[in-house]
Image 1 (tube, rainbow, N blue to C red):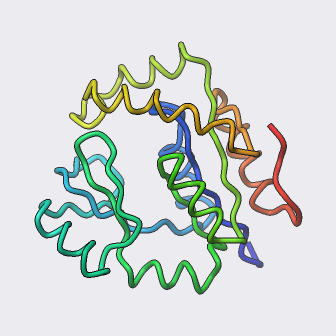
Image 2: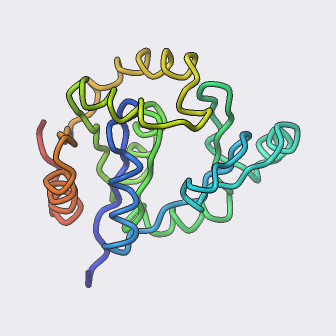
Length: 187
């Protein structure tokens, strides 16, 4: 890509395809994604952009401002490192992809004008089949699944909706959105 595409902020329920789409955008299309600092063990098969730290160090980092946009989902704290966030701000989010909870997605979209917030939808049968294939503790926690459903209310605040049932079609639509000149797709 010659000109940096708009950044994409991906949200949706667990199993909606956020991580899969993010991986393809990074690997095949040169998008960058920020390192996530988390307070859980990181699965070796998971994206290498996760950094695990203990909760006391996380709290100190958040209080001192070294970690920004701290939030809790399930039993885990998440944040970004301030130094990397400064790079994102300098680019206004262009060329970056974020895989975040819906409320964080809306916040990022309000701060980064060169991004589009996207809600990934998938039919419930497909979504549950994807989730049941997983065995990482973070994906089998009932508290996390419950919180996911509570976050469904944020869907109505997203302008861009992509059906992720067909991953190739979803990728194509995401790329169109990232390379569009005006506001995003209407879902």
